[in-house]
Length: 100
Image (cartoon, rainbow, N blue to C red; front, side):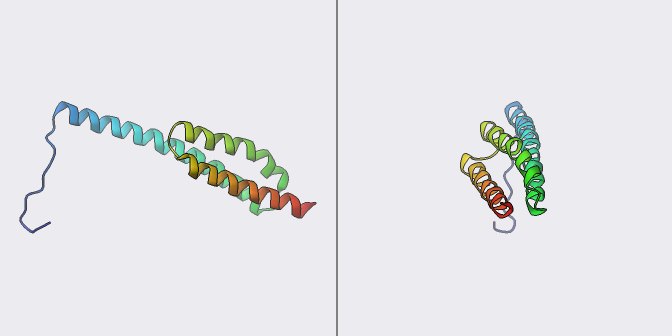
């Protein structure tokens, strides 16, 4: 922007203020859901990297459930969540094959 050009601000009308409040609320909910998903994935990856197939197997179902909830709540897109599930499943199957 050219120097000295005034910056346009939205007027602080009722609707703009309400929109700001709604956006903050949605951002908080999305942050909560994203944190929950990332924690579940982190726990499963820790179990996989430690080579504990039993613990990883036990964590698989709750982790995939959290990913599915994130899809339903539109926190994650379906392709992103499915990519996470696919990679975690491949790692789990590889770990089980190595143990067998």
